[in-house]
Image 1: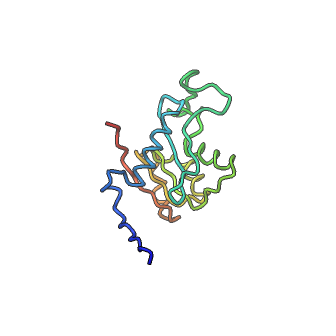
Image 2: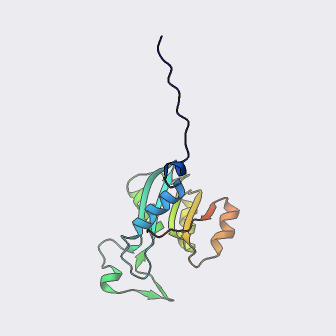
Image 3: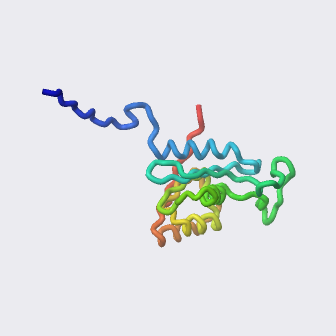
Length: 159
């Protein structure tokens, strides 16, 4: 007679000293932001579905163009417009590589601007987790109307 194996009881991540999934993906977004080439603000984004990373992006210049931290900023109304935002780059990378992001979630170190929010909504992303608030209040009411979950996750600085 073969011995029956007992299934081990699943312990929470906290009991093992591991971070929860939201913190894990936000930490990765923070690391992605370290690749940013605009020294005015470093932003990173990670698109996830079912706890699997689908795409990442950071704010930076158009491919082949000089970077802000090398050539200076292209300023309009107090904002640098030379860069493509992290969220847009994450969506672009997914599209470029044939990765379906519909139904996914995005972790971004700063809340999306209005244009990025509209793109995220139309891409079918159902949840936005952001670290710090960044300038556009419209995203909150529209997210509610569309059923997009919008949640702030404070970014913890490394020790």
